[in-house]
Amino acid sequence: MPMVRFPRQLIDGYRAFLGGRLRGEQDRYRELAQAGQSPQVMVISCCDSRCAPETIFNARPGELFVARNISGLVPPYTPDGATRAVSASLEFAVQALKVKHIVVLGHAQCGGIRAFVEESKPLSPGDFIGHWMSLIEPAAKAVGPRGNMPLDEYLTKLEQASVVATLDNLMTFPWLKTLVEQGKLALHAAYFGVAAGRLFVRDQASGQFVQIAADEHAEIFAAPRF
Ligand SMILES: [Zn+2]
Image (tube, rainbow, N blue to C red; front, side, top):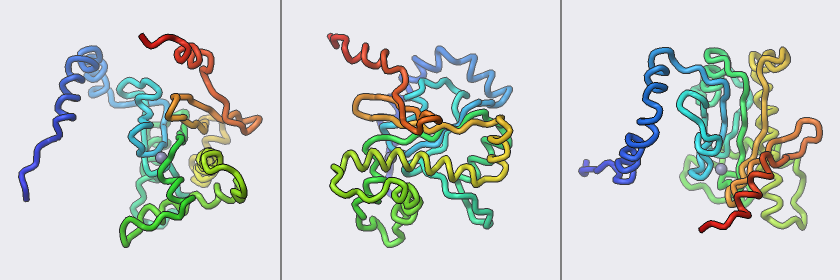
């Protein structure tokens, strides 16, 4: 096996963490190590390197329980004895940690959704992405045919519909559904617009994704940068 070096970027990043966040949050890390974690919020999101929930929500250690996969999807409840990463994460978050909220976070320019739309060729004979992305077929049906819609607009619609379909899939887990119906667990759909950093949350009544903290966002973008 060739000699490998741990990436320089990660060593530098860790050094910055030592001098920055760890210095400020040493006590919190110690407390969490002793008492264990008790996050109130689980986030299910895409692996995409631009959409880290801890960054977007400015989370401290112990605050978010995060499960990430391509496009942030949840396969429907299938107790078949197979090794199921998302189901195991959900089971732990809901049954052991007893989180109060699950946020499904979609995002703009999602490569997984785009691969589905463009019917991209498999990257490997196993076509893991192709099989995984077939999970968004119900969302594509809900959006309807693209017709003359510009690609960007269609992708946004599908990215958002996929988040909503994921909430439907969450409700196929019987123990999760019971808690939602009892008002002990709330499900939320959110969407991150990468380019401008806008965050949208789905309004339950209207079904529309509504930008949150829009005024603060506008102010930041209006301010001169230098
Ligand atoms: Zn993505």
